[in-house]
Image 1: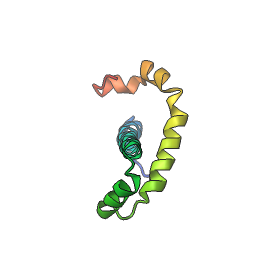
Image 2 (image 1 turned 90 degrees about the vertical axis):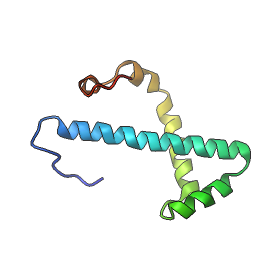
Image 3 (image 1 turned 180 degrees about the vertical axis):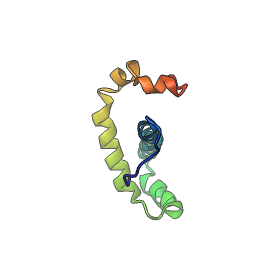
Length: 96
């Protein structure tokens, strides 16, 4: 992500960061779930090859391993983050 001035409005940069984070975490979660299911079905290479057809710039097996490792590391503090969301979430009409 390249840094730029988001807006003259106070809080715009924080909102951008938070909303982008939601999107990235969703993509990471879908990727992790996809490759977990593929692993259980014994078709990881086939799924990676299929995804490479649509998104050739991504090294899917490497990305899935990186994402899985990151999610395992973050999972331990997820319940705390869920119970104590940032105050900004309420102002965006988002309720965890």
